[in-house]
Length: 441
Image 1 (cartoon, rainbow, N blue to C red):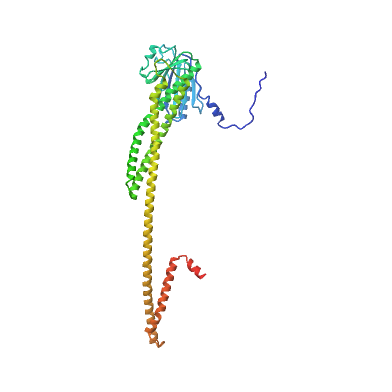
Image 2 (tube, rainbow, N blue to C red):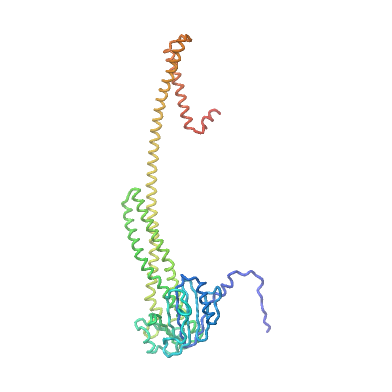
């Protein structure tokens, strides 16, 4: 049969197509032969740029004579003669896995044949949070000498992959500060063993990072409780407080509380969100391996439900309290702001009324002044006319008596002065002269 190779036509490719396709294969499982020893560590790396961490790893790989990571890689596997190093960069931490062939009869014998370079030849990228010592051994069940390596109070034993293996841990630190995990290989092939080991390492890693939210919740809970109590006191004072100044002071208190709450929520929102995500990953990984109970031992998921789930619920509760309190503060602030606005409108109304009253008083005063000014100006004008008439009589220009002439001119002078004063007042009330222009037009 002749094979036919079909070539894709020249179609424009999405710029992220290759990255999307390669993502499914970016972090493959490593095949593991039994017995095997894996030392796994996770470091918080938010203070170290990924480029600096990648450069340090590349320098170590070059000195060890193995392939260096790609310039933009977040995952790298270095294969040495007697050991393998697996590096993976996540959003807030990096993991380093060091696995070697197990030679001793005891699963957790120390020291190992080939020591991990972390902390010596290869500097740690940040503070250590997770340390796991995992051993994969051949066996049919949990032997007494193996069970003695764990704390019986928190010992968890489960059968996984339809009984192909047993997984054992107590989630406690040993004398070297590592969490011990024992995998008893009953019928695992290398690929399935590698996938199981990787998932167990992820369970413990994500469990530890999920619990980082609990200290944050314990820190934030008293602050939320204090603001809740202050809100109750402010709400009670709102029922009795009157006056603009008092309500404005209460509104200022609410704004300060809301600002403090929002700052706290901004600090803790990432941690609480990460806790929910890590908890979901833990449950997802345990769901994939398919735990089955063994004898009277607790399963991993059963143990974590009793210990991890309450911590996750605590973080969720604090986050919900923050959101609900923020809503209550906003509602109370809106009520107070409405009351302050109404009182300010009432004050503005009273101020406008007072201004209108003063305007009417000024108008009356102005009218009174106008009347007095007409009389005063008329008096002075008549006085001038009296002098004029007297002079004219003395000069024999007229024979009319000056007093009679002044009396006859009185009505005309008063009317003329009144008309002139009114004209001046109207011109002052119409600065643009629009009224006069209209009259003359």
